[in-house]
Image: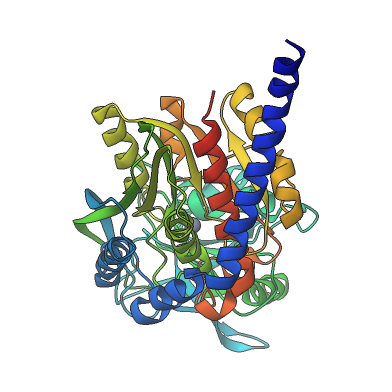
Amino acid sequence: MKKLVTLLLLIPCLSFAQHEETIKKIYDETLTNGHVYENLRYLCKEIGHRLSGSPQAAAAVEYTRHLMKSYGFDTVYLQPVMVPHWVRGKKEIVRAVDTDKHGTINFNALALGNSVGTGPDGVLAEVIEVSGIDEVNELGKKVEGKIVFYNGEMDPTIINTFGAYGGAVIQRSSGASEAAKYGAKAIIIRSVTNRQDDIPHTGSLRYKALINQIPAVAISTNDADLLSQVLKEQKVNAYIETHCQMLPDVLSYNVIGELRGTEFPNEIIAVGGHLDSWDVGEGAHDDGSGCMQAIEAVRLFKALGIKPKRTLRAVMWMNEENGLRGGVEYARVAKEKGEKHIAALESDSGGFQPLGFSTSGSEEQREQVKAWRDYFLPYRVWDFDQNGGGADIGPLRSQGTLLIGLRPSTQRYFIYHHTPADVFEAVDQRELELGAASMAAMMYLLDREGIR
Ligand SMILES: [Zn+2]
């Protein structure tokens, strides 16, 4: 009896040592023979940015399908999904017209995704500056006939920059309809970034039903400061010309590749990122990194000869940026087929040094993941306390799936987010690899331990 008790006490230690050893192999393999960086280079340089509905998005679907097949995943397939097809058209013109001190000032601008265009005649109107939506509501009819300039900033005192982003992004997502309610003609927003520079940041807006759809653009933070300064000196008229438009939906795909589980094949662990990106830059951090890390995470099981007990599935979701159609469709099909996703893991916060994992699930599920922290400490991955998963996996939560988000350092993400600067060169190979290895290690633990 005493022997049995000793043995039972020993088993968790044994499995800890075993897991520890396998996880070390996973990190070592990625850091010495990783494919993730080269695969990201291909996606960024040979295909480029890939907004939903674009030819590059279609090329990225083909590329990732081919890649997963070439790695010998058991099943690789495409899941059809209709996606919005927004196009930017000719370069935007945004300028302050005929100012006293500066003459006409041309701003570095990008139309916001999903925005209607002004057409060739443009919009010319007086600019009125606000710090946020509350101020628009206070002004009410005073914004009628004007261009509303949202100049709210990301709060620099919030250490997790995603928190500061969350506070400021509402002027981008909802600002147009809020201003249009009172008869505004167009909006200009300060780019949602914590960096002071000349680069404009795009991103999606949502028009509210039954409210006039007005054009919306973002200008760089330097330009926003300049415009604000000139507005303190005088009345400013701005001219906006954009040629963007929403075309009919087109057929696209989520790309799925899986390794079938040997013991519990019906229990699925999904890992992924979103394959679409904005139509500027190369979508390197957002979210080429997450996609390539997900494929790498599954590839590592094959490379190391680890046979998963449960089914591992790499998913490239389509259309996170301006619709989330891929994530919604994926969850819908999973429910329809009666698939059981025990966990879904997403990387969509950039290819920076991983610091932890956030979770969204029942208290018991979350505690189970937090208890694995010790396995990750040797790799300086320590932060397991945050709440949250990821946009694309969000729709799975109502099916009881535990959601997990890879949490890299957030300090530099919003330099690149939705800009022409989000290119392959902005991603560090080692940081990207550490993220991929962390995801594979998390999947390994989910696979071996299951989720209660
Ligand atoms: Zn993203």
